[in-house]
Length: 440
Image 1 (cartoon, helix red, strand yellow):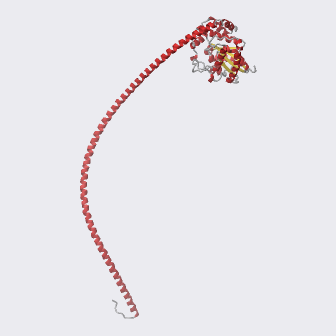
Image 2 (image 1 turned 45 degrees about the vertical axis):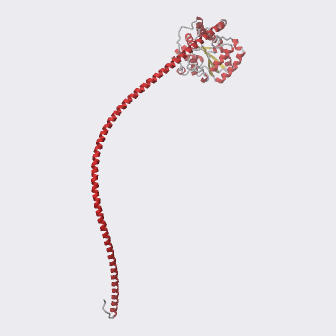
Image 3 (image 1 turned 30 degrees about the vertical axis):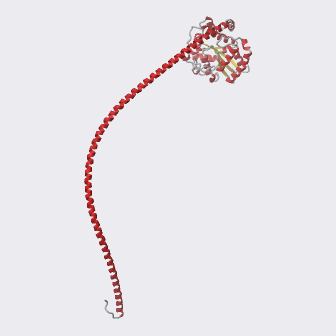
């Protein structure tokens, strides 16, 4: 092992034992469980809000079971030698490659899958080669709650689930016999999350600066099947559970159970096949009933929708009738107002007609007066024209008189000029002593 500064937390335990809640608690403390986009799809598996299980890890562990000619749901109980098969050795390199691709070289990572209870030796070897120190966290929960929860998801014989329960605990105890195993009680975590969370974080060597934040995901809503003393229904399986919790379970009990159970596996597989066939027939019947129920529900829904549509139509019609009645009332009010307005308009029209007739008479009178004035104006215009003609004649005579006066004035001026010349000659001669006849 080249470097142990890195740590990988392996979350193991039975399905429905609280592994997801414990993984989320470690996630809040800084443990990286891979890309959430690679987790199991909660839209298909709705019994958990989040799984913290990588799909490729589930698929890889199922491939390991396939190499052993079995499946996870069957009574798989591998031995140490099963991991020496050539098929498993080739898978080891593939696991190393996929692990590095998912986690890179992160110093603190986590892996969660109940299947690792049976494939632990393979994971232990690969993680050690990658330089990781391994801390295996076993999730524990009240046996009756685990049995109820699993049987609710996948119905089956009680004995089958009792074997399923015992196999997980015996296998994880046997394969982790040489390494520390950290037991984590889910019921105690739910009862006292703050104190128990701090205790387990310290045990795992993880800092928990804020216990409230680290346990904020724990919800009573998702805490189904409360713990009780009913156990698994089998005294031997209950003893396995009790001794696993108090650390007294012997690792070799797995080998003893394996040697005995292998004698009955064939019969058990046949029983499982019969059960699976019966369950398949039951599921087919249930599916047919559900299909009929869906059809009936669809028909009822269609009828309800039709009734709802009719009720809506009736309600709409009632509203329309109410609206129409109100409209009629409004129109009656408008008609009365129009009739009143018509009466006022008719009275105004009558008064206007009388005023118009009066004005027409006044206009006719004014037209007669105007005609008289026009005639008077024409007479006066005739007189003006006559006076204008007379004025023109007088003006012509005046012009002729002025012309004659001007001619006479000119003649007078010429005569005076000649007399003045003569007088000047006369005076000139008198001055010289010449006698002249008297001036004319």
